[in-house]
Amino acid sequence: MNGMTNPSTAHVMKVTERPPIVMADGHGSWLRDTEGREYLDFIQGWAVNCLGHSPAVIVETLRTQAARLINCSPAFHNERMARLTALLAESSGLDRVWLANSGAEANEGAIKLARKWGGAHRGGAYEIVTTIGSFHGRTLATMSASGKAAFEPLFEPKVPGFVKVPLNDLDAMARAISDRTVAVMLEPIQGEAGVIPAGDDYLRAVRALTRERGVLLILDEIQTGIGRTGRLYHYENVGIRPDILTLAKGLGAGVPLAALVASSDAACFEPGDQGGTFGGNPLMAAVGCAVLETVNTPAFLANVRETGAYLAERLGTLATSHGHGEVRGRGLLLALALTRGDSNKVVTEAMERGLLVNAPRPDTLRFMPSLTVSRAEIDEMIRCLEPCLP
Ligand SMILES: *Cc1c(COP(=O)(O)O)cnc(C)c1O
Image (cartoon, rainbow, N blue to C red):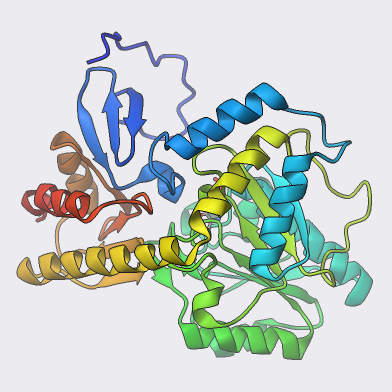
């Protein structure tokens, strides 16, 4: 118990439905509210807290860097920005990195970069092919790029120039690419849509197709990147490499940090085209360095694959014994398809029992624990979830 009283939430702008609890502190896989109730957290800030809540390495990094240099303005290089961009370039095989504060901002940058590239190399073409069901963020352009049905009626008129095709339909993709196209933009696993994977063969074929047609491939790995699927970047599972890669979520382990990473051919921004007051500030960049140094080791990533396989197996057994559907996803980004009932009710009941899971759609539960989650915590999650299943 921390003795805090519940603060009023009256002045919080209501942009989403939130349960009537107020979170106060967290450690590892556990969160605690102001009334002292504990929750086993399999949401982790939407696949953000890749090392769990308040991990020692990030606390120490923030403490040390804050005492040294928090911000020197984007007008100057700083040592942590130099280091993080080098780590990202080396690990991705892409040469140029621009640091930002959110996934939407990185994707907005990717869209601008592709348009600039289209202006220079494709006779002014600016269309980007995206997929139905995709989610790329909540700025006006990234909402326009997203293939989320609920976004369609909102904030008209949208930013023009996005053509949407069904995921995993290569013929539709091939037909959608024209002289007006500059890029294809994909999530390798559609996260917000309910953990819908692009097939490995499909991803390889899209890579070949974009090369053949001379357009860029943008992979939005904001949810799948930074070890979430058992490799540092999901595209390594498939044996391809995009021209442009966007990262956020796990890259900051809970702090606002994102990256737009591009091949030197695609990286055609000139001074004045792109920027941002907080982008690349040493405090956040230091966290990104600590995250990559922790996650990008063979042992850490092998452990994610093993823990992911264990979670998938436990979910599979649970689904079979209760007559539910498939387990989808990769690594520690997994979903369980329900064959009956409403996943939102499961989420509410689980929360009452002290378990946090997410319902991206009414027939799907999503699991995105810390990459450091233990088998004992997975067992505890299954034990809590079982009585909540319809
Ligand atoms: C979360 C997410 C975004 C948006 O990131 P923000 O940091 O919320 O702006 C974009 N794309 C994907 C795939 C995401 O999961």
